[in-house]
Length: 119
Image (cartoon, rainbow, N blue to C red):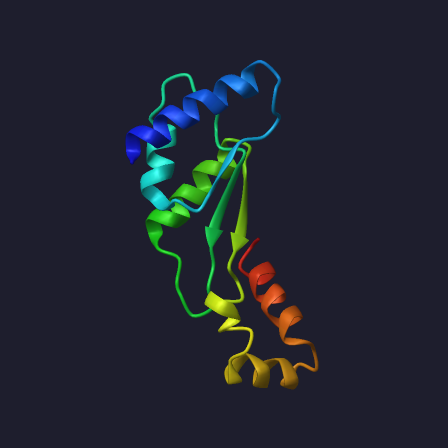
């Protein structure tokens, strides 16, 4: 819930303030969690935000705005699940064929896609 995210973020921000940790972030959670984090008064900025990135799925404007805000606050954006659920993209005929055209391993093909997207 939003309240749980806010409480957790306040606790983690305190841990960062006293030097117990150097970096705090969100692994997924989407815009709702990121909004909850940013609403905590006196809390630390996101150091890291990990977003699910799937080939063929466009990143929406709200998500792009969040990425810009995280970067503006000194944080970094990371991508997760780039191979798809249960490696579905990695094993797909489309990725296999495109990787073969480029004469590279399908894993490298998807990693290069993520790099091209700015991660």
